Every structure is written in C-alpha cells, then in structure tokens.
Amino acid sequence: MNKRKPIPHLLLSGLLLCAAMNSFAQEYSVNLLKNYTLPDINRKALELEFNSNGAFQGNKYEDSETVSSTQVAGKVGAAYSQYKNTRKFIGGQTFKFNFDGTYASEKPADVEAGYWTPSATYTHSNRFYKDKLLFWEVNPTASAKYRRDFGDDLSNTYSQSWTIGVPLAIGKGRIENVTDMRQAIYIAQALADKGVLTTRIADGKMTEFAQLISTVKNKRFLDYRKHLEEEITRVDSFLVSNEYVKDGGAAYFTTLYDYWLYGALFERRSGWEVSAGVTPGYMGFSNKNDDKYKGHGWTGDTEIKFLYENPVSLAWQHSAGVSVNAGLRKMKSKYNDYEQDIDTHSVGTSGSYAIGYYPNSRTNLNLRLSESFTWAKSTNQSNDRTYYDRISNTQLAFQTYYYISPQLRIGAEAALNYSTNNASNQRYDNWNGSYVAKITYAFY
Image (cartoon, rainbow, N blue to C red; front, top):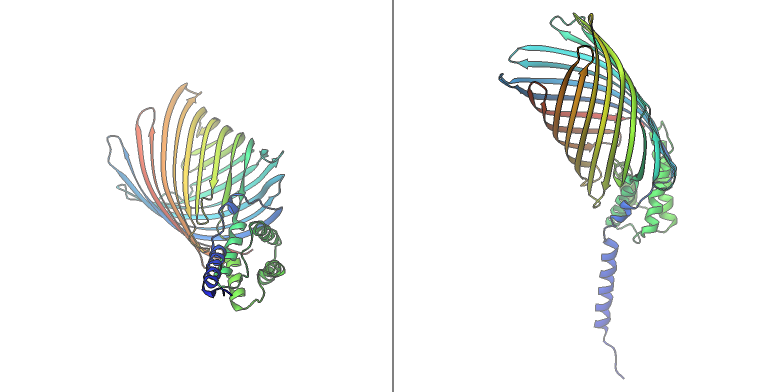
C-alpha cells in the first residue's frame, strides 16, 4: 500500500492559506468610491472660525516705479449650514457671518491704514432631478457688507454694499459625495490590520455599510457624547450582526472610535456634470469720505460649465472644471453731483485642475492651478466714451488641514497669483502672494 506523503499537503495548505491571507489583506477597490451613491440624508452644521492671514504684492505700471504693499489681517466667523440629498433633490441653505479687521502699509508712499468690516451671506440651493441625470436648479443668494476705515483723515470713511441674485440652470450629470464610503474602507482596513476582522467585507456589504454610515450621521445632538454613542452603537451592531467581528476587545473599540472620529473629515467626490444657466441680479453700493459715491444696477450672467471629479485611488483625487461665460452690467452711479450711466459687456473663459492627496484620515494636501481670460467693453452713456479691458489671471494655490480633534482643526493656505490687464490706455501687471493660517471649531 502506497502511503501519501504529508509534505505536499502541507505545502498546498500553506499556499492556500497565504493566498487567502493575501486576498483578505488586499486594499479595497477604488471602484467602491467611484460608484457609491448616497442614501437620503439631511445634515446640519454650526461652525466658528478664527484666522490670521497676511499678503504681499508688487505692482508695476508703465514708466513708473514699483509699488509694494503688505498687510496683516484677522477674522472671526460663524456659519450655519443645512444639506439635503435624495435621488430627486440636492440642496440646502447656508448662512455666514464674518467680522474682519486689517492693517496695511504701502511703499514708497509710507501710507498706513486699516479697516474693520462685518458681512453676512445667505444662499439657498435647490437642484431637482427629473431622472437619474437630467436636472434643473434655482439658487437664490443675498449678501450685505459694511466697512469702516481708519487711519489719517479716515475717521468718517465708510462703505456699504449688497447684492441679490437668482441663478437658474439646467444640466446633466451628477457628482456624488463619496466621503462615507471612504470612511467605511478606512474602518475595514484598520480593523483588518489590527486582526479583529474575521473576514474581508464583500463589495456589496461594503456599500451597505457605507450607506448605514451616511444614514446615522443625519441625527443632530447638541450633546456630543450622546451623538457619538448613538453612532458607534449602530456601526458596531452592523459589524457584529454580520459576524465580521466576534469579540470586541480594546483593539476593536479603540480602532472603531478613532476612524469614526477622523475617517470622514475630508470630502471626496466622484462624477461629472455639465450645465448651462443664467443669473439675473440686482446690486447697490455707497461710499462716503470727503466725497460721496453711490450706485445701483442690474446684472445678468450666462455660463456653460463642465465639472469632473475622479478619485483615481483611495489616497488621490483629481478635479477639473471648464467654463465659458458672458455678462451684462447696467449701472447708474453718482459721484457728488456727477452722474454716470455705464453699460458693460463681457465674455470670458476659465479652467482649473487640482490634485488632492489624502495620506491618512487626519491630513490632506491640495494643489490647484487655475487660469481665466476675460474681455470686457464698458460704455459710459453720459459722455459716450468706451473702454476696453483684456484680463488674464493665473493662480497656483496650496491648501492643507490637520485635525487635532473632530471639532478642532488647524489649516494653512498659500497662493501665488499673476494677472495682466491690457486696458484701453495702459498695461497693468500684478503679482500677488498670500497666506492664511486658521483655527476652526465646530459645535455640531
């Protein structure tokens, strides 16, 4: 009788075990992000923001010396937002209030001055989907701003402005917020790394898990502890009832809490959309110093745009946008006793491309390059004079955030901007560099 040798069986078993372990350890497919669709959600947020920023710039006019300026500024702001997403509707409303202060100096004129200004903005977005991809939208907006200047002979200087607009658009496509799917993958991978996940979560179940995560975030609690307890209980129940976790020990719960708190702090998006729309509006302003200047007028803008969001991997995001626009302004103004009636026609195009890197759940880095071109013709009906502007603008911007806690985050932004304006009578070149450092705290 020929006995089988145990070694080949051991080798085969080992290979199968290694293959199983390798399959279990595989990173989840980026297609889970690309194809994720949100369930019906309704979310609210209230945030406070404090920041400090500064800027420098150099301007050179033809046949003149370079003028340089620097400034430092700070801001206190509050924002309340509400967001709703269903298969038939995407929209919400946002109210923001900011209080800014600035101190600036200019060389070689040796001018020092500053200002403080409160401002408020309200937006109400409403996008209605006729079917899976076709949509129409109406998004009324309103803003108001007051500014008081200080410095030499500026004690009685102020300005105020306000705008009202109602953008209307039709389009096709849909860009989904896939952040909750990224959080689900964060949780699954972290639990697998800790050795507490019994099996790899299948793609279908992963979608179910992500939609559960999206749903449990809808409920708002002023007591953050109760909110967290409710959310963790629901997530734990899903993992345990599906037998992905058998014994919840310290490694399980600490990992679950960590990636629940930090796994969805940065928005990820997927999809495309193209739209065409018009924005009728009305605006007004007034300035007062030694002279008085005030005005009001109607505005109208049309725009065709294309937006594209592609999560090319779990860590990298590509974003792009292109638009073509045309505008009309009919403004009436009065400077002391001198009245003007100016009509402005403009056409323009713009494009941008951004790369986002998300190395972990607490940090992100974004680099963005944008370019725009605008041609404008302004006619002063009061004296029948016409002026032309051909403006180009290039910007390279960098942004990063780090979360100290889910409510408290620090951020930094930097931008380098170059613009030219070939006006009717001269060429204007401008270099502008800026930075922002800020701390943001969210109540809920």
